[in-house]
Image (cartoon, rainbow, N blue to C red; front, side, top):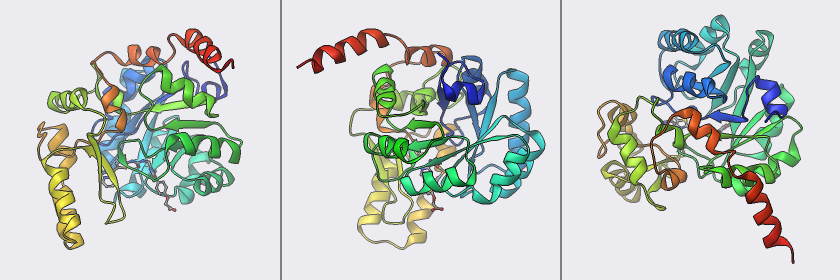
Length: 314
Ligand code: TUI
């Protein structure tokens, strides 16, 4: 498969791995890139030196293009961007904010910029500023989320911009990929399913929690504080929701979440850890190599399309 997103990024399959803080390490990014997709190292809340080491490690593990996802709410975002300008990974994806002030320098360094956004207005603004493609993330996704579903967001963004659009949020298998392309996307971003890959070094308890998840288990906390986050239901999300219901002070609510990702990822604390994952967790059934996961999104497409034609042939 070679479409305009593949051409832009120099990849074989139009699949980008989501930038999951703590989870998306150099090992995962390299495995995805080696499997023909675009792997991303998630800078998350990590200091710049850690990100530099990760970029160098990823270079040792793959000779394919890869990128870094920069979480713009991080206190280290600016210094991480400086490291990126020195190390020059092929791609920068950004999340949780407006990457406008970094756009010019990134592009001057020959780095492709793919902002993750959750609204039409932001997509248009990003295209005007020079984004090479737009990653449009629906509310089905894990982590920090917007309000609009992938189903409604993708066609609106595909109509509003001319650069390639990557659909994100809720895409767990080939059916989701076909739907995303039908809605106007040029590629897909996959996060949750890559947690359950052989190469992801997250704690096995975290992986097992994703495998066990059912349809209503990926819940949202933080709507009241203005930073909604989707994660698997556990003691932490219940306590969070209780404090929100009681209108507890902002600081008290926020304190609960501090260190939550590390507890989940490193310690495998499935009760008080933040098990960020999307609604697609309920559709992830096994742990397999990244290359297999990527391929699975493009298996059985012809049969699926004939099935659709049959159902629609009224
Ligand atoms: O960024 C994400 N997902 C994330 S970031 C993250 S780390 C975190 N941890 C705890 C609390 C909050 C964050 C975990 N998951 N996805 C991409 C994304 N970006 N979704 C929505 C947005 C977004 C939101 C606002 C993009 C731009 C934006 O612009 C605001 C503005 O107008 O400047």
